Every structure is written in structure tokens, then in C-alpha cells.
Image 1 (cartoon, one colour):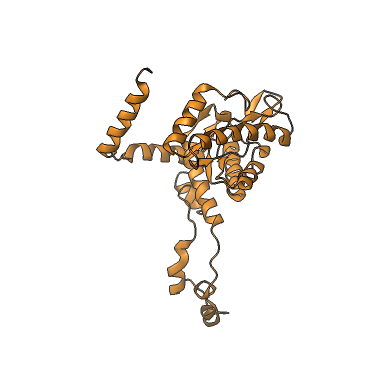
Image 2 (cartoon, rainbow, N blue to C red):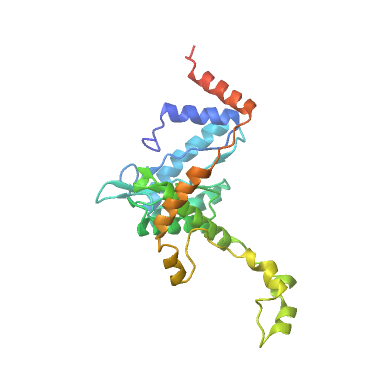
Length: 272
């Protein structure tokens, strides 16, 4: 996208194709604050929202009722010191989710990326903060996981770390069950105050409901040292190697492959 008020033929062609097929789409003519829109959040969001609504209206005119997601008029922060689009800025979120909720349309959120050039402390912090913010705001689809360097590169190790963060957030967002079984008042009355719950059937039945990380380290210092004393980045890189070596891609159904080939051939054929 060049500007929310200027729409390229290729972008519109894709939008119309998806709308006709009834395929869920997102059309996000993102504005840059201070460049393609006003520097203020509200002003640039108005510009981005107008461009996005243009795509939404066009798609509905092509095929009324076709499914869509919207970003809510995303207006990215432009770092005036470097002229770089900042992917992890705190200004880049929440308000856009609220706009999508206002329209009652699923929200296409942006999180899990970083402006860091390495899989380091900054990358982990920015991924965690943005993912949690989008989850709390109520985004329906979250994009940018594993993006690095303001979208100029990506990292499989960062994707693995984000997967761990997302697992934490999923558990955090789950409601706490409160009923006779979870309150366990009879058990408390029987065990308290001198006993403990380690050998109780209730503990055995429920302890696995907690979230246990696969990558983050929660062991003692001695055990961590004996296991190699690796950093999160080192463990993530090793996990990537394990996945690449062991993962087997399932073959698509022959009918699906044939349909994909036919679609590609039709799109590649010269126009009459």
C-alpha cells in the first residue's frame, strides 16, 4: 500500500478475487504517523480507518456478506530520528482493536514482532508486551509473530520463543473455574491445618491443569547449570534444529493439490 487514499490495482484485484470467492480477507492500508497521515494518533488513525473502510465497502459491494477482518485503521509510529516504521511501539495497539469492536468485525492485530536485530532481551520483551496487549484488548487474529528488525527480517528462534509466550498468555486468559470441585472445601477441612496436599487424589487430578513451559527454565540453579546453563536464545535455536530435523509435512489430498494447480494455471493464463 502506498497510502490509505491511493489504492493500487494489484491490491484491489486481490481483494475483489477473495470477495468473490467468499474467502476471509484483511485489507490494511496502514498509515505512517507524520508521513502518510498526521503525526497524532487520532488523526492518523482516521486516515487509516478511511482507507480500510474503502476496501471493506468495495468487498461487500462485490459480494455482500463476504467474511472480513479489519485492523481498525492501523497507524504505525514513524521514528522521526531514523524514519523507520516501529513495529513494537505502545502507540500501535489497543485503540485499533476498539475500533474493530465498534464495527463488530473481527480484528486483525499485530504483535509478537520486535524492532531488535537479534533474538535478545529486547526481542523477548517486545514480543511479550505486544502479544499480551493484543490478547487483553481482544484481537481475534494476531499477526507478526517472529518478525524482527521492524519487519525487515524474521527469526525461527523468535517464533519458538513467541510460541512459549503465547502458551503463557493462553493460560493467563483462561477463566478460573469456581465450583465445588475446585474450591475443595471438604478437602481443606480434612487436611488443614497440620497436613499437606501433596499425596491427595485431588492434587493428582488437577495439577496438570497448570501451565508448564517447554522452553522457559523453572528449575533450580544447580539443575540449570548441570543441563548446560543455556540462555533462552540458545535453547530456542536448539529447538528450531530439533523441529526442522524431526517434523514431517503431511501430504495434501490429491484433490486439493489438483484444485490448487488449476487455480494457479488459471491465474497465470494471459488475459483475453
